Image (cartoon, rainbow, N blue to C red):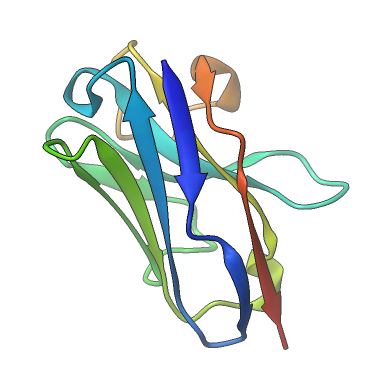
Length: 125
C-alpha cells in the first residue's frame, strides 16, 4: 500500500488549495480514509474523514471550509481547502486503513495503519 500526496504550497489567507492523495496497492473503495495535519511542535490531528458511502466528518476548526472527497475510479483522495487561515499551516497527510470501525467518523490517528509522506501547506497573513 502506497499513498502519495500532492497539491500543497504557499497561499495567502483567504485563498484555496486542493490536496490530492494517490493510492497504489489497494483500492479506496475497500479502505477507510482520512486527512490529518501536523504543525511544528504540535500533535498530528485529524482534519477530515470519509467512508465508502461518502459519509464525511470534519474537525470543528475546518467545518464549512474544507471538503473531503474521493474518486474511486482514479483511486485518489482529495481535500479541497477554502478560506485558508494562517493557523491551517501544517504538513498534511492522507491516511488509510482496512478497518471499518468508526469509518467516516472522527477516528484516532493510531487507528490508521497507512500514511503518505505529507505535503506542506503554508498560509500567510
